[in-house]
Image (cartoon, rainbow, N blue to C red; front, top):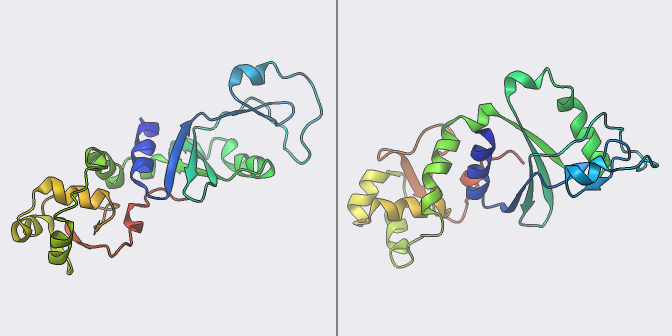
Length: 200
């Protein structure tokens, strides 16, 4: 499922500290925010929020991401083939912007690639970063080196290296190629933007 792929990317992304599925529903009459569809269905006819575009039907976003600075971004997951047929793709950003929200539409073009495979693969290594061996491993990774060669020269287990990738210490290309023993890594020097796989 595309939604599960989005969650995998979000869990790896260091900018994101929280994720909520279907966080609220916009009422079709007022444009007001309700906690769920049931509450919005009961909306009486009432004045709309100023500048909020009128909705023809209820709208519930797929996800709400909370970022490190506590700002929030709405994520809508769509199949690219259906994107042009949906009028929502052009009206959603303006509608949510009028209500004070930021929205990003993410398509299956991102959610079916190497990035998703790598995010799901690295998920089991999140939070299992080795502490005692990290400095030694990163010393051997001052210059680009394959995972296989790094494991050999550092005498580290593959799981320890992958944990360092997931924790933001070993930089590698997660977007265009699946992680293998021949993947090239190098010390990130605290630049973990290679884990930022969702366009925010």
